[in-house]
Length: 100
Image (cartoon, rainbow, N blue to C red):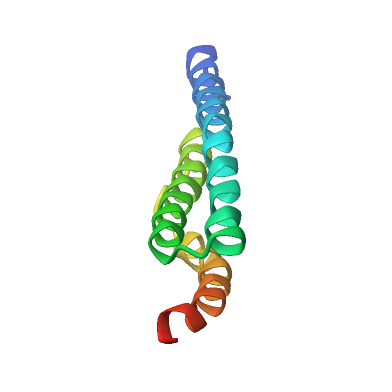
């Protein structure tokens, strides 16, 4: 069995990871709202690219905080694979604006 200080340290690390991840939810929500405005109401390719970059950064930081709290390796190929569907959707939405 693990000694109590090690178990307490694991619990503290998990709680810090959850708090850090929950702190990234509001910036991610802000990015989603800004993306709606940049894509649907006022078509602005530069703003869309900016807010999409911030959203991707927040997503990666959120997953990294959760994985750090769980004492798992932060880098994962599945993390990057999980970003593929939103990126493909954004390319699909922005393609007519970029080419036309």
